[in-house]
Length: 437
Image (cartoon, helix red, strand yellow):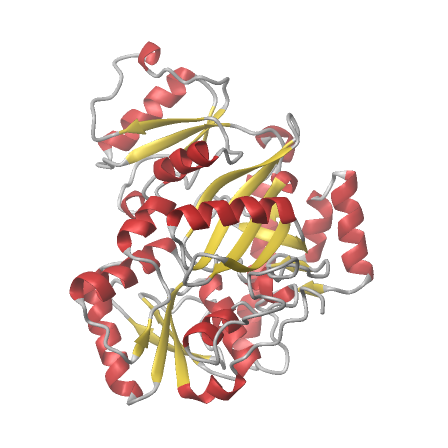
C-alpha cells in the first residue's frame, strides 16, 4: 500500500459533531469547505465582522463576536453556541494564530469549555515555545535545523542610542518582523506592515523607534534576507499525534504571495509537492516541543547553500490550508479520526511507523486564490514554469472560493469576481519582483 492510500476512519461519526471555526478570512472558509467536502457538514464560523469570504455561504452559519481575540468575549460567544447546539459534539478550530491563542485561554484559563467541546490544541506554554519567533529560532539553533541568521531586539528594554548599538551580524537589506503577532495587531504607526524589508542600519533604528513609540513592547526579529522572490518560498503542514509523532505532511512550493501591506507574505499560489528531508526536520522540531495537532511551517529555499530554511511555526491549519485538500488529502479528517472517530491508523499509511508511516505523497496540484493569469505572469524560474505547465496541462487547479454546485448565491459569485479583479490591481500596484527580491 502506498503512503497516499490512507482512508479516513471517521465517516460514521460525521453526523455527531459540528465544526466551530473562529475567524472570518479565507482560511476559515477553506476549513468550512474541507468539512463540507469530507462530511457534508455546515460549519459555525465566529467572527467580529461578516467578511465577504464567509458572507452568503451555503456551508456556513456565521455568528458575531465583539472580539474573538479577547478570551472573555470569545468565551461568552462559545457558551451561547454550545447552548444552541444541544448535545452535539463541537470541534473548535481557529483560522489565525491570535484566534488559536484565544481559544487556548478560554479552555485553560477561563475553563469555559466542557466535555461537549473538542479543542485539538497544545497548552499555552507549548504554544509560546513554538510560535514566538525568538523561541523558534533558539529551538532551530539547538536542533541544528536550517534557519536564517537572526538578531532579536527586545523592545521592553532600552533601544540602542545609535546604529553602532544594533550589532546586526549580516548584510543589509534585512527582514524585520514582530515576535508576538497578537500584540503587533494592537500597535499602530506610519508605514506599518506585516513584515518590513529594511535597507540600512539607520532605517532599522528608525523603524525600531517607531514601533516602540506605538507601544509595542515585545521582541522584533531581524533576519538575514534570503535572496529570491516568492518562487523560493516553501510551505509544510504536519499532523502530529498525542505522542508528537508526525502522521501526515503536505509540502508545497509557493509561486506567488500576496503583497498588499496588510497581507504581505500570505501564499496566493502553491504547487503541492513532496520533501521528505524537510518533513524529517519538522518531526525533530515537533518531537522536541511535544507538539500535537497541526503545525504549519513557513520556509524558504536558499540558493546560496542549497538549504531549505525554516522561518516559523504556525499553530494551526494555515490561511492557505486548502492547498492540502487540493493535493488530495483533506486535512480535517485527521482531527476527526483522532478525536471523534475510530482513531488514527496503527499500521501502514499514517501509522507513524515504517517506510510509509507518514502520509506525504501527493500529485502536483495548483492551489490559487488569484487568477491563473497572474500566477503565469509572475512565475519566471525555469523549474517553476515547468511545474506550472504540468499542472495546467493536467487541469489540476483548485481555488477554495470556487465551489461549484454548492455555492449558488449570485451576490457571492459577484463578490468573488470583484476580488479577482482587485487582485490584479493590487499586484500591479505593490509587486515588482526585480525591486523586492
